[in-house]
Length: 212
View (tube, one colour):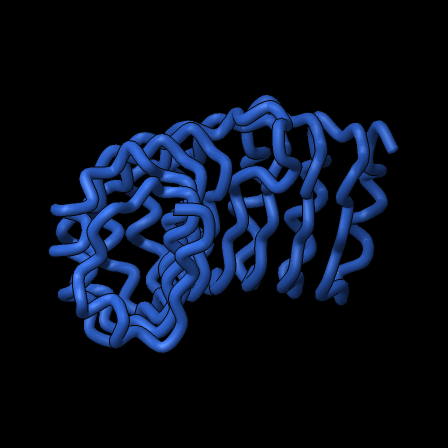
């Protein structure tokens, strides 16, 4: 599929739409008519940037924009106030890792429960991530993140943290931050060349230490 017909705007009762694994480079403005849409999957397409029409879908709860060729998100992402799950990174190992910058506006998605950025080129998370008060899972494995923001300790509902494949992290400092995350239940630490693991880690319900 190389293009999406403008007729899509006629299906105003649509709640879910998957367009994954196509050759889409744009979306018709008529998509905005789908104000009941709660699930949109654009995985593995060929956009240069996120089509702004996506940010006008006020009912969206789940958005998959992984492996679509974008490098960042537009400020208008803040409009998706009902979003609960956002998948951005890359899921084909060895695929072109385009995504590199997470804007501060991500902090305005206060209903977000899952933020997934694996295999991306991001080097830092914005401090505004502390505003994601409902976040339960943060997946930043195999990225280029140099350090975790200290504000992450304010995420009191965070249960799962995936930081596997990030040996560039200063783990002495990283563990100090993780220790302050109150309700963490699952942590992925594989492929991090770890030597010393503090005792508190073993109080977490589930730990993945594969290949260290």
